[in-house]
Structures are given as structure tokens and as C-alpha cells.
Image 1 (cartoon, each protein chain N blue to C red):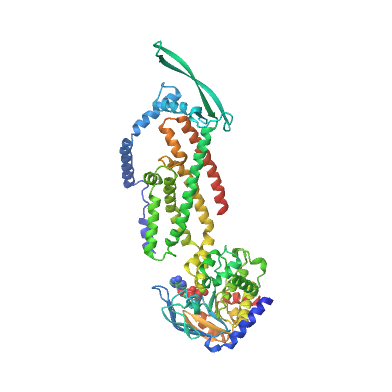
Image 2: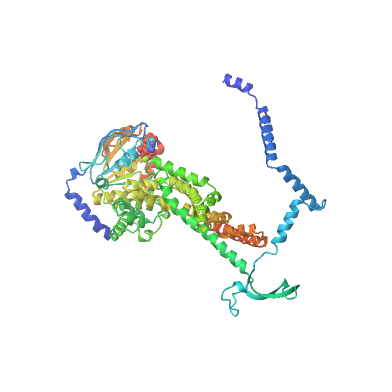
Length: 281
Length: 335
Ligand SMILES: Nc1ncnc2c1ncn2[C@@H]1O[C@H](COP(=O)(O)OP(=O)(O)OP(=O)(O)O)[C@@H](O)[C@H]1O
Ligand SMILES: [Mg+2]
């Protein structure tokens, strides 16, 4: 942890010296549709602040994954604009700016037969010499950085050489987070990062995400469908329904009426129960 | 409700044998009958009955029986030794015989006309002959090794060519749909071409010997592996690939980190299957002159030396049996 603390401090201070208002991730008039299908996101406007933990709350199929994938460039928007620090990200995909965004995946997105450390170093594979990537011979500095990130996410050295498939779900997501942190992102976009974890593990992973975001001044957009977890961890909640933002406010403003707007009918008892068990842990 | 129950009452089960079925069966029988005549199956039937009759003692001889008797008679005992007249061996040193060999003096009787007496006389001529007791067997083993080497090189060729072809010929990594279609059809063509026939032509291009065999089997192997490798790439888990893409990784990086580690065991299993198959087929392409034990076997067959043919067959049988067992074991372990 000493190594991680040392590396975390300069990150945080450098973030604070910048003009915070310029460092926003903004979606303006964003519309997304899959080829010839219906429009999934409709004229969406959203602006995220650095260091803020925003939960994207919405029912299944509301478009959470679509929004996050569009932000990191996996989906090309039909129209609208994504910008970071006032520079446009969409369109020709400027690599330099894209590298300020990292995604965390619901199913972790690790290569199961590669080792933990190889998976983490893959976080900067795009910025590394292709020949080195092919031989999996990364420079020392990158290896050291990967180890630091693994320590930051509380994984112990005995796991570093293990194959990713031999880890537990919670450990896998920690590797996913370490990989996302390799490129020192300004924003983390986490798509239901705890959906396949048990409540206890989910709580720990959420705590870690929140803590890392705060320490490093990273803005986090975390999609969830569990209401209680959203309330517990977020600084801001954005509610989504049928590809439109129907709520945007502090967790304390998430009233029963707001929930009805987001989820349509009042949340079912099952949904309440599952979010409560999540909160209990 | 009433409508459905009315139509249900009118419903009849289909007859088990319809006129259509009977017509189809008749047509098939007539076609088979005509074909049987073209295939001279009647002659075969006659010969087979005759042979069966001989077996149970009804008649004295049969054509099949006679041929079998002749072939087995000449095949056994199997030839495993090699004899060479010492006069044919340059720098022969009697004190340093090769391993497992001995010298034998063979005498021959030669009749010739004595020019002085003008009478026919018989002379005894003595020849020293080197007998290597396992000479032919060792020679065949060397040829068998050549066959195995042909199979290994052909597999190496097939794997090395197939990996890039499979990448360019997979739906998710082909740079253009035209390239995908071109590669997939080329690969299908290679698969459709029987290796025995391509070997015939390659022997014309490259002459008798292993190179023609390696190319014939290698190209056919590309036909298989090019297709199966591409299918492995296409069906490999998209999640790690998507995660790498979100990190801005290039297609090559995605293949290296997100695809190949996952499909490697499958690729190994397929390659070992092709290796097994190539070694088996290497004996066959040898028959048309593409090197190895097959070429030797064909040569002896043409000279009616069935005792040597028999030894070659036995050796092939033993090696292929061992290979089958080994490859099944290895494939079980890698996949
Ligand atoms: N590849 C695709 N092609 C066509 N339609 C898609 C595709 N992916 C998602 N959709 C549609 O887009 C809509 C939004 O999907 P999305 O995955 O963004 O929702 P989500 O909020 O992430 O849901 P969940 O909570 O189930 O993950 C859904 O109606 C879905 O059917
Ligand atoms: Mg989703």
C-alpha cells in the first residue's frame, strides 16, 4: 500500500491544480441506434465532473450499456457529440483523448488464459510498441506500474502470475479495475461492475471504485440497477428510461416518484429485496 | 372452439406407406440394378460363390482362392534380410563386417562349352555373399522415417500457412469482405483436391521424392486448417476482444491478447489431428512416387516381390497403430 499511496498523491494534486470545470466529460445531443434498428439513445445531454461518482440508474434495456460503449468508442453515435476538456472525442476518434477514458466491464472482459499481470499490462498495449506486445515483453516501467495498480486494488503478489480464469469474481473485477487504471484515465466508465458478484464482494468492489475515484480525482460513471447501492455510493444519480435521462440529482432527491419515472411502475418487491440485501452487506 | 373441434374431427392420420413411397423405392431399386450391371457385380458374385464353394470343399479351385494362395505363398516368409555379392561392394573389408551380418559362400553351377574339347562341361563357381540379416528391415525403417518426416514437414507447412490465412479469412478480422471470400474459396478448393491427385502432378513438377509429397499433403492440410482455424477465431469469446478494443488496441493486439491465448488448445488439437492424418496419407502419396515407404512398396509391387511388399505392409501397420494411440493420448491432454 505504500507504493500505491506514493503514486496516488501526485495524481490527485495534479488533478486539483487544473481547472476543474474544463475537465468535464460531456455528451451533447447524443443519438445512438444499432444498424437499421430503433433509436436507443435519443438526443441525450449529460455532463460529468471530474472526481464525482455518478451512478447511471435504469431498468434493463434502458440504454446504460449503449451509452458507456458509445463513450469509449465501441459504438459510433448516429449524431451528437462527446467531448472531454472541450475537445471532441467522437468522429475520427482521437486516440490521445480516448486514452483518458477507461471502461470496466460487467463480465470483466479479461483474457482467461493470460496471467493477471499480462491482463493488467494490456491496459496500455495500444500505447506500447507492437513488437513488444506480440512477444509480451513490456518495458520494466510498465511492469512496475502494473504491479503498483494491482497493489492499489488490494491484490497480493501470489495472484500476479495466476491465470485470470483461476480467480474469483471479485478478484477478476479488481484486475479489470487495475487494467483500466493503467492509462491514468480522467474518467472511469463502469458498466454494471458488480452485476455478477455476491452482495459482500459487490460492496467491497464499489467501495474500492469510490475510494480510487476520490483519491485520484477520477470521475466515475457507474451503471447499476440496484437502487440501494446507487443511493449508498453515489454523489449524483442519473436516471435513464428508454434511452432518455428522466432524473438527474443528488441521492437524497431520489424520491418514490423519481423511481417511478425511472423504472416505470413502482419497483417490484423482488427488486427492493435484492437492492436491500445488497445494502445490508 | 367449435371450428377447431370440427377440423380435428376431420383430421386423418397419414397412411404409413403412400403411393409416393412405393414409387421412390421402386425407382431406387431399378437404378441400383442398372448400376450393379455396370459394376460387374454379377461376376463378383459368381467368383465369391465359387470361392465359398472351395472353402467348404464343394469344388477344387476358384479364381480368388488361387490368387490368394499365390500371393500369400510368395509373401511368406517375409523378407527382412538383404544379400549383396561381395564383388559389388567397393572397399570390402572382410574383418569389419557390419552389425548383424555374416559372409556366406554361395556356389553356382555354370554350364559352358569347353573350346578345347568342344564338350559341354559344368563348372562350380564360388561367390562370397554378404548377408545382412536385418538389412531390408533397416532399409524399410529408414524409408518409414522418411514417410514420418514428410508428414511432419507437411503439417508444419500447413500450420504456418493456415494461421495468417485464417486471420484474413475470418469474418471478424478480414480487412475486407472480398478478401474473406477469396481466402475461404481458395481454402475450400485445396480441401476438395484429393492429395493423391495433386501428388501426381507435383511429382511431374518436382520429380520423384519427398518434396512432392510434402507439398501435396501440406496444401491439403491448409484446406483443413485454414477453415477450422478461421472458425475458431470467429467463435472465440468476444468479451475479451471488446475490452481490448475499448482500450484502443489494434486488430493484431486483439488477436495476440484476446483471441489466440483462448483458442490455442483447440489449434493444437487440430494440428495434431492433421499430423496424424498426414503421416498416414504420406504412405499413400508415396505410391505415386512422392517419397517414403509408399514409393518403396510400389516399386517392389511392380517387381512382384511380394515378400518385401509384405514386410513393408506390416511395418506400416505397426507404425500407424502406434501413431493412432499416441495422437489420441496427446489430443486428450491438450484439449
Ligand atoms: N447489438 C445490438 N443490436 C441491436 N440492438 C441492441 C444491441 N445491443 C443492445 N440493443 C438494444 O438496445 C437497447 C438498450 O440496450 P442496453 O444494453 O444499452 O441496455 P442496458 O440498460 O445496458 O440493459 P441491461 O441492464 O440489461 O444491461 C435494448 O433495447 C437492446 O435490445
Ligand atoms: Mg447493460
